Image (cartoon, rainbow over all chains, first blue to last red; front, side, top):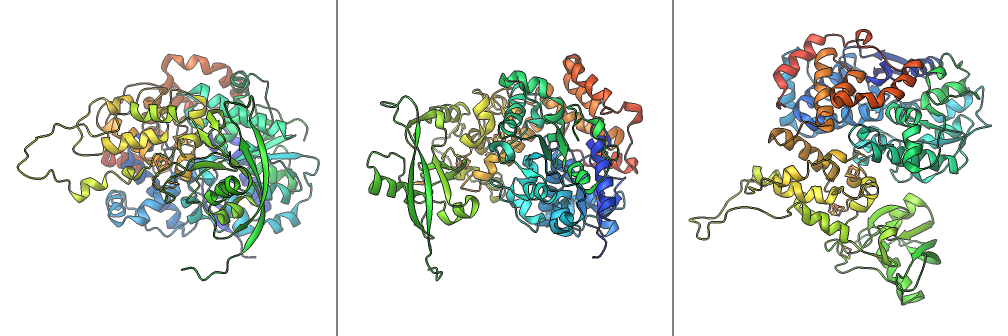
Length: 293
Length: 325
Ligand code: SF4
Ligand code: SF4
Ligand code: FES
């Protein structure tokens, strides 16, 4: 198989509050012989909040990020659902609207860049599923996660709006019955847990302005996984991870029940199955301890 | 006319039943039927009533996706029964299908719910044009094609409630107006003829307004009319800044804080953003922050790795910013 190569848009979280996500991404890419060229010039995607303030500016900044991936002639890979949404949304809007694209390019020209629309933007989860292939992952598993019930937590911005999702991914996901993470869990030898909240919101984006709403959503999600015998949760989104991993106290208070489950990044789960060490995967960086692996 | 052959398959339906006048608790009734690829969800509701139980109740009127009466939930997904084909539902969920009202806790009889909260919230956003009318105008009050495009399909809403009862915040926070009310608010806020001063302020108030939306995009996913309520919510956020009605609070500072971080570092300064948004209230985050710090999850401001070519980002912010706060 030809070596896979992508431009990596790390987003901000992987460099700050989820260092283990960056570590495990690199460890897994190395195991799978995937080359990732980090876009060190990239700015924050605005995380769906800058967009609420200044739409045009957010388009220009996201288009600049994609322009750097285009300079490498590579598909951009994201490792955060919200980065994926905002970057893919920018691409969608510019590709559909030549007038807007020209306006944005007028600005980019000031710094010698151009957004062409030649690079696709996909989440690492779908790069692995669509381009690498689950069958190959299965063949490479050295430590099957067979003793674990693993609850997938998809995260809104990877599966909704499905219109955007369908543009980026070859294997379409049904937002009401997504399967990609479940399939990945099975490929890693684990047992996938089905539960109602797997495609629901974790509440991350209103943690500051509506803490009660956010805490109820987090609590309900962890409780749903727990009630279906999950030993742990796994997510492709570092923001969901942060919410589910670090906010269990407020979540427990909000739903009136003690809840807490280890929450792995998707990359950490793959890494474990492929035989990476706990240190390589940064397992010590979790607030909800993972001491049984 | 479709030339595809009509196919049939057996489907098990688990159907929510409840009569508020007689039942203490709701229960589920099972029906197994042969479903043809031509049928829509409403056909199934009709067949339950006609073939199995005449007391089974649901709302429908137009059967053309325009009255909004027939919305129910199929396997948890808000759906317009007369528009949604059973083939799609079977493709989505397989042959075990659960039919429930849009909100089980608001059920009156079977699929019929009390939509009172929906209409109250609809009314609360002044869902009509506010304008001084010249009773004897010299000519028609024309709206240019460009200006009418600004409505962005918001006037196509049929008030079916599918988005409202799919919204997780509506379930948790009873003050929250919900996506359909925001669509209505946007419909008139974006109309050049409208002169209401209060509507945008109302939909920006905390707890009830657009800042409490969790950005889950469920509303956009379920809307049978392709209205994209989430994009209207984003536009209402933007309008609040542009029209100068955005108050300085945690939510608005959170949005603006991104700009400050990006200007300084290219990337976000996560801790700095929380400080900027919360002000002195940041103290309430200290316990969680300490836990995170112990786990190496907090990078101090001087250790943040800035974006390469930061000068480009700063130049673009200077030349492309369109809003001031
Ligand atoms: S995006 Fe906002 S309004 Fe729409 S369903 Fe989610 S929380 Fe509700
Ligand atoms: S926005 Fe769409 S889903 Fe919501 S009430 Fe209107 S038509 Fe129904
Ligand atoms: S019956 Fe009117 S929308 Fe379905």
